[in-house]
Amino acid sequence: MSEKLFQEKIDSEKKIEPKDWMPEKYRQHLIRQISQHAHSEIIGMQPEGQWINRAPSLRAKMILLAKVQDEAGHGLYLYSACETLGISRKELINQLHEERAKYSSIFNYPTLNWADMGAIGWLVDGAAIVNQVSLQRTSYGPYSRGMIKICKEESFHQRQGYEIMAEMANGTKEQKAMAQDALNRFWWPSIMMFGPHDADSPRTGNAMKWKIKRQTNDELRQSFIDKTVPQAQVIGLTIPDPDLKWNEQRGHYDFGEIDWKEFWNVVNGNGPCNKERLDHHKRAHNEGRWVREAAKVYAEKNKLN
Amino acid sequence: MTYKSDIWEVFIQSKNGLAHKHVGNVHASDKKMALDNARDLYTRRNEGSCIWVVKTSHIVSSESEDSESFFDPANDKVYRHPTFYKMPDGAKHI
Image 1 (spheres, one colour):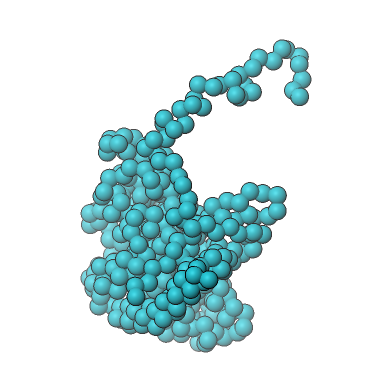
Image 2: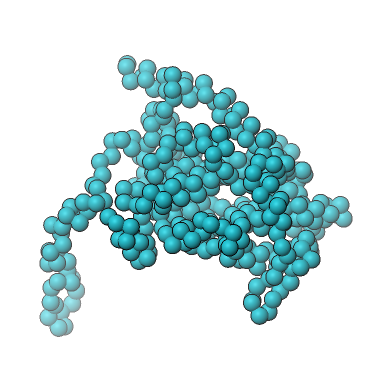
């Protein structure tokens, strides 16, 4: 099949399945995007996992545990989808460890107190949901199916975060200050999660043409901001952006310039927790090696009997 | 020794009376681990009453590039569909 026929298939909204012919660049783009997405789910367990045994109530602890378990699950759905493109799980993990594959920079920021659990659920999961809802319509079948499943499960994540923020914002003066401080620290990194402006995003063209992505970075970012600003107003918190204001003409919020220097600095490995996150993943992976090996030997032994 | 686990495809029956449906796959070194992993990964919200796991390498699939000729025998047999037949006016559906 030629690239022309492939494009016709894409244009008529037909999904591409693992055994179908696809351009090599389409395959590579998907591997990079899906693996980055998978690694983000897995690394994303760390900043929240640190707060499971410090949760302020049994209810909060059970919820956070369930959320972190979901993130493990979502990582696995995505690794599975990625493997259908002919790359092994082992190679995907190697790419992460050798820093040839990236994960979302948002997880390189530290979680300093319980309000950060609220901010992460509300803003980080909120941003992820905006992106993932759009990706349910991606052209690659296994990725699309994974996104549909993830979106179904993830809607509680954003709600639990917003609930924490709302409770703290309506609590004591100190609690409200903590909630505002968490919003101040996580707002800009959250809107950076959508990536560079479209004009500075060289891969967007192909991704849109092949319908891997259905909306551009800037469209998704705007949609997240438009949804989130009223939520902040409802609970009496202030978005830390003096330029933020409703633009009647556009029907959207205008917002201030993003500090791209900080964005690239964190992407390139110099964020507050880059090293810690990766080291932790490597250590956990290496410490689990004997379990994987023992399981294999046990399976071989049972085959002989 | 280099470790390489098998991949198992997972099929879930959401409740008795319905067909098992493919939901994804898991890595596991034996069938018990495959079932346990499938339960933990795909039924965290009571999605199933029964799980099948099948080694991916045991599945035989038709090839998508041959799909036209492979499914060709069904193409010209419109009389297999009820809409092919004319019903006299006034006749009721069975």
